[in-house]
Image 1 (cartoon, rainbow, N blue to C red):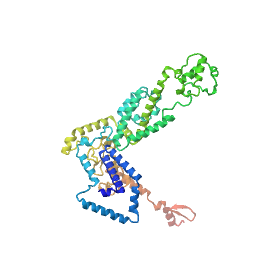
Image 2: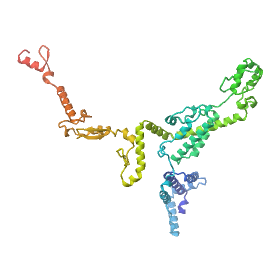
Image 3: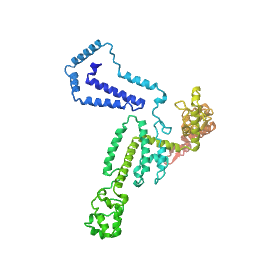
Length: 489
């Protein structure tokens, strides 16, 4: 009611409730269309907690001061008076609004509800499907072709690719990879604020680019001679005449390292090289560069490199956000590679039959199971690779259990802890000695050997009990009794 909502604290409570229900609706529908409303509520909450007009503090003091009961009854009386004047004004709880929204969403067709789609390879958002990006990577010139498993492991190690090979085709590949990763991330994490994430990436990238610390893109800083090639440190030279003593070839090599014109006489080369002392590439006279390095070309190349590096930065961060899905994808690919060709063909055959017969057989209540696979927790046949992994295609017969067949080694080993030897082998205890024994004849033979061994190990007093005569000789009991009877002791 209006009387209650005049309370600042009650307004905050209402905002919190609505925000929680909006977020819950976003999760259930797997949509981001309610994100704007959630943002508006959050802004209202922040503004309310800032309490610039101090109404919230005033209300807290009124309900927690010495006259709190008086304040309570004052509000209670105002509430009763309001409903007395307006008895037909019934306020509906907020949860009813969201219940109606959920019912309207569930009443839609299945195609409308499943707005988020995944490919078969993605497994409803559990795995990545990078096959198309992998194919584009292998088509890049100058880069070594890799298999799909290696690509999944190393697709974000872009800093290992030489800078010279990062051309326009490479940029197109990065755009394609980033589009897929962005789309996949948007589908599996609809509540993630991607715009905010990429704003932070951009800020971090700009700072690293200026410092020259971005992976794979070292910055050309300091003197103009800090470049690859036969560079020359000019700090040791005070004039162009001193440079002339190095000769034509050495000056030419130093000029080529800078991308400058390297022709002319010895004096011209020395003056041209000395003019670059203490300058960066941007400060050097553009007319000194060769045609491929002059003016606009340098800046265009730098901008192009920066755009490519920016794409790499976004891929690095997105790969971190998808670390769990990436690890699961790698495990899934390894599991598939471990299967034989026959197993893959048989599994594909089972899947094809299951898809073609699912509708008809589902209505009749009979599952199509040509391989006679065991049923899983969902009442459907388990995958064929799991069937082979647990060895369920192998049967073990046990004569002691009445020629019962056990499916798989796990069930076979488990039955030895509970099977009854006395049922067909009377008098034989169920001990660890009889593990993996399935024949009655073998069990009886082993029992006889165990009894003989126990008999031999039993203590024989006549042969093993020792006595000592009056002379200190040690003899066994039998010899001692014979000597004593003959009076020789």
